[in-house]
Image 1 (spheres, rainbow, N blue to C red):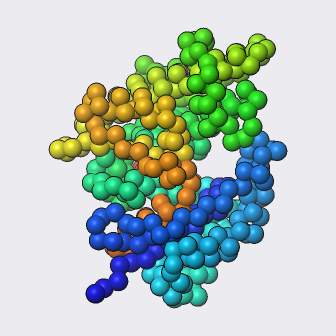
Image 2 (cartoon, rainbow, N blue to C red; image 1 turned 90 degrees about the horizontal axis):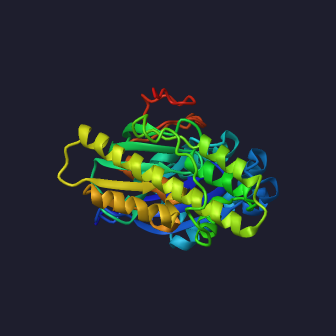
Image 3 (tube, one colour; image 1 turned 90 degrees about the vertical axis):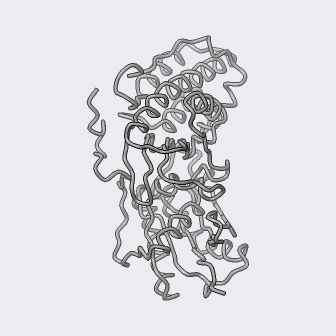
Length: 357
């Protein structure tokens, strides 16, 4: 009986050193044999954000150990690996280079194919690690660096329908948390604080809410939060502002997602419409709840990755590697790191992304 492909995935695009072993099992949903993630939280905490050089140094120090741990937990050995996949972009180039070079070295030593992976494609396909999902489907990718609506038409085939014209949603959460005095990474803490506050205490702006299609903007909201924080004196007021911020975000996503549903239907005729929400911010339960409501109202099936697969991880990188392996889409060892690598190659990566408002 033919052995199912076994893929090693490596992720070092930002501040997570990660390695994973997954195996195709013939059912359409691969088996995750290991998924090891080493956080650099303590390294960057005092700086209030990721310091690229420190992140790269931490990757260098940990990557060998993390890969060996992933292999050990999987119960496999290097000789059984069929291909090595690594994130090539987008991300911090000094960080990407660490994982990329390590993966290339393994590829040479094992005499196995090397596969470069777009980090965003990992997020886009991540639900396939736990559920069968047919193309096409609508994707809302929300993370610290990206906020986009995309039609996912197939492996390597994406059409961007909308994007943020300034801050990414995760960035807006982190900046708001910082203004409220919450330690980095503060985004996940906003939801916790919001549960203690009154969401109707502050009226915050919803930039381009009635124009720009399903494009989004968060810079004006962040500026409004800054102005409010200058007059906050009590802890309860912080809770109220966090709650008002969360409510505003939910209202923006609700309306823009409804528009994205219509745009998706214009270009796709499917019997069953699926809506995937992926990326680190997809772990926010309040956002999951409001997008589930919007989905059901428009007869879309809402699909979210499991919470442990929302943030940066190597299982999603291995997944893309597996899909490319099946099609024999291998890369040469001179493949470079790509700090900017859009999913939709026809979409501008410049600020504003070519959006006409």
